[in-house]
Image (cartoon, rainbow, N blue to C red; front, side, top):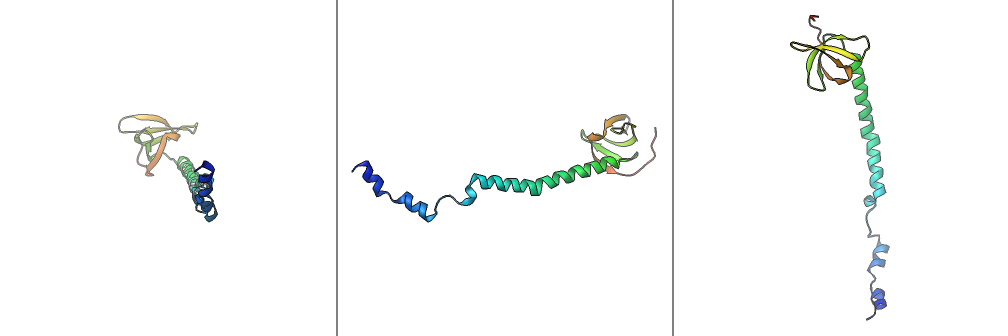
Length: 117
């Protein structure tokens, strides 16, 4: 038997191509990239925008007396907001610290207790 005879006797690849038994459409890499892009636009992008908007709103509403937590885990109360607008003086149990507004991650309470300067 010769090589050309073996090729002539193998009808499997031609039959598979006619029947459409190849890879399904969702296995196409371009389809997967398109689905990921759609997921990013519909789910991830609005969530990032919402988080930025909420953080900006929290920074704008900071007032003396509010109890806060910084990104490094320091818990304290705001004593004053400096004139430059990007620094805040907070009071912990025994010390006063000057921190940037951007390090404040959460406002625990909006109470305004008596503040000792």
